[in-house]
Length: 195
Image (cartoon, rainbow, N blue to C red; front, side, top):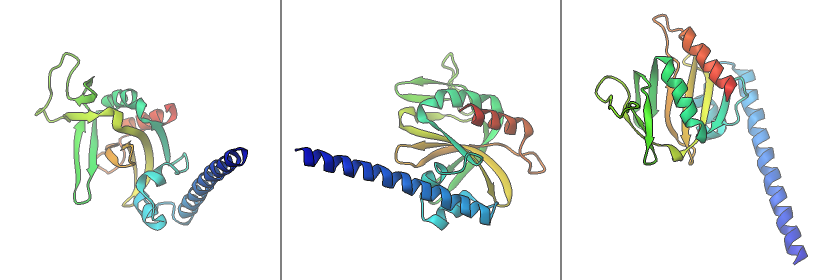
């Protein structure tokens, strides 16, 4: 019996050790890719490493990404409501859906966060702002990411489910010259520092 317990402890320890080593290797490989090309995109890193987006994001150097647990959703979405018009993005295998919108106030009911439902229950659907129902207990990670995309600095808040799939992303908006809006950029950095 003692030999079995020792073997299990050995396997557990080695499994945990291998996981830590693999994660360290991923971090080192990502750092090496940034050193080779400081403007490399997350998508390019994923392709280069043959890795899922979530695995790359969770291993980014902190200057490029910082994550929070899904249970921070309420706190983070309330902050995003104050940002003004943002870019909402949902990637599917065949279609990238994006539109500018304000994040409306919402409320939680029956396991969902209901976008566009004011505190008094008024719906805002059809008023040019986001509406819908998000199953919040499926949110596992919320990641704030700074990257270069198509040669431009880009910042987003990504929401990921328990399978590591992206639910949606909220991007810092740009001005008419293509620059990040200064006020939103400052709010993004403050949120990143706070989580």
